[in-house]
Image (cartoon, rainbow, N blue to C red; front, side, top):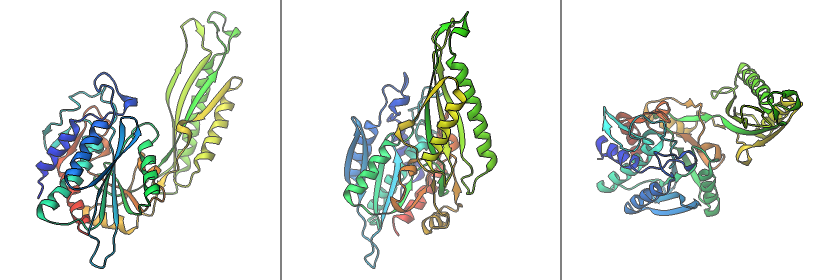
Length: 387
């Protein structure tokens, strides 16, 4: 049996392969990209007998799809279990220790991606390797899927995997989106609508501001209006365990010089949607609010990545969630963050977020995953792969 130390060493091995999303790469990370990690996972899966497909979603940034065939149940029934973990990590530029050393200490594995989400790759592949060494066969067909561009970039890897499922006719019974959930099955989280806002004004000498039209001043009115809308949304509450939607302005840029009235200002606002909200209607309502707040200046509002996405939500009483709760000794939960599940609506009969470690450690200046979480997740997969 693969020991916790064995699995920890596998996590460490993956942490040492940088896979920072190129949109968040910097001096420490280098150019970034998921290619090296995808190739490493593909090689290991092939060594374990998987049929592997590398899907070049973006040049040099492939998804990896590794298929481990199962035997089916004694009555001939077959089922398909997909485990989807994203290959990319967030930036490392703010980290306070070596992001890629993968050190094992204090009953933890440290480094960027250790919990989000390289631990799940290590657990799944280690359990499959262990079963093969023991002469045990997988019962369900298992797909280990690695997707690019989950952290930022519009979930392009998840969209590509969805196209792969459609083009191949693959029928997915159970889909695990491998996020760090402390091994509790997560059955819902908010969706997202991103708003890219440009305010157009008129430049003038700052000693005569009346001759210009200050785009930053108009942007400030937009921020105030969006803050008020956030408070309205949250005060209304939510109808599910996911809670209400949220709204926040996270980027502002403007101004050409200290003595020039700014003729342009840009903003980014992120609206998280609650279950039941229509992303198109949310965008249209916010665009109208933004344009009114900018008056008499013009505000142009575009939707980020060309689309919004509805929230992920399903009944917490599904059989798969009940099984995971029993095996992991946890209870169903809802999450505040988003995931690839936003791209997988109706792709599987049952979809759930599940993985070792806490989201609280993700994206931090120091990231780690606890060894006891690795062992708990491994115990769950040991059972799932034999049922």
